[in-house]
Length: 522
Image 1 (tube, rainbow, N blue to C red):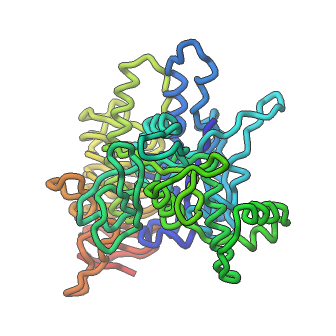
Image 2 (tube, rainbow, N blue to C red):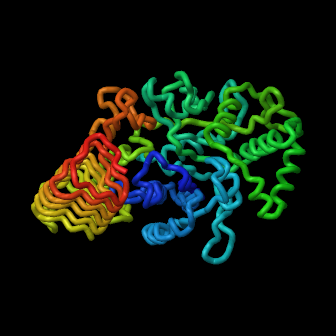
Image 3 (tube, rainbow, N blue to C red):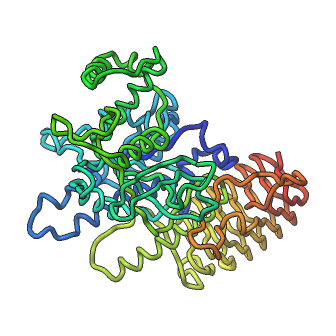
């Protein structure tokens, strides 16, 4: 049995995503008709459907062995902010158990996992009341990652290499398999860089956002972890506790185990107070990469040890993929992700039409390639998603790569391309919207032009392995003006008729009576 943990952060994160994250949590921002984290859940669901359809040579025990049974959202948003989404997601994916685990505070990508380790590793009970299967591994996925998730390939690498043994190393278990991709030399310094052995896929060195070039293989923020990974995290937690306390780090392994047992026996309040921030990238991966690259010798107890008496508990592998991948750090990245998710949906719908395997789509995503919609009568170009409750005039032209949210209203003669129109937004007659995001309940008058820059939302198509740079400066250092960006209308913005808005960001509930260019409107 597998589980999946999606790290969604909290209100203090996603500041670069504003003003879109001011009225809706960033993990719930809709891209291609689904909240961002629902694409993660959908990938876990499809993994189970694919695994269940693979013949296992008559062995029924392996059919569901590597299927995700539970998805845990981990963050520190208020429970009420996610309640509606959890209800909808549970109804859309009845075969998955979906829950939210709220951290007492921001504990980091590894601190939250360690805090809820017992819940993550707890077996799911069967319908007859008996104890279910043990957790064999669990996915950890950053909530701000958008990708064509190759979870099936990660599973194959993780479990095929769990008996890893080479001529140069003693047998070591695989504790974590990291989804990786390649980027350019210049962009690599914006990500976590990994030096990977090309033959064994072992991560030999890891640096988070280095100041100089280390490697063009970067961390994608998606992991497949063995339950034994918590042993390594416990060691890191103990070392950090000792360092924060009396500065002493000279303890034997038996003392570490005794202290961990005492910590588990403490009341919940004391354990919460003792929680500390730990990071999967800086703390865990760097530790495992150092152990994987060190020489190991067999210990007296049959285990492996590295030099300086540190425990060599296992190795970390890199599963390098050529699938599409991006981070959702800025609003411009949402336009880029919307395009690719719409294309992925279209590809999967075509596969479903060709193959008899039943892989139901959980949401009413409609990707159209026809020039006219048979029901609404409006015309489309390329991939377009329109919520069933949205109203689109028959003379409107949408696409390519347009998403229209629930309750939105598109008037006659409107032209929209490369944009996202959110819930209950209104676009007046004969208006043009390009490379923009129209916020919830925003209103665009008649004969308006709302346009952003295409350059900020796309990687350089002429450079191999180019990715979106996640840390572009907001303002130009020379003249102080806003750098080219997509145009964003915040929640409740009102744009009066015959207004031109170019490369601008409008904060919520602002009324625009004149035209703007390259400005942030407060």
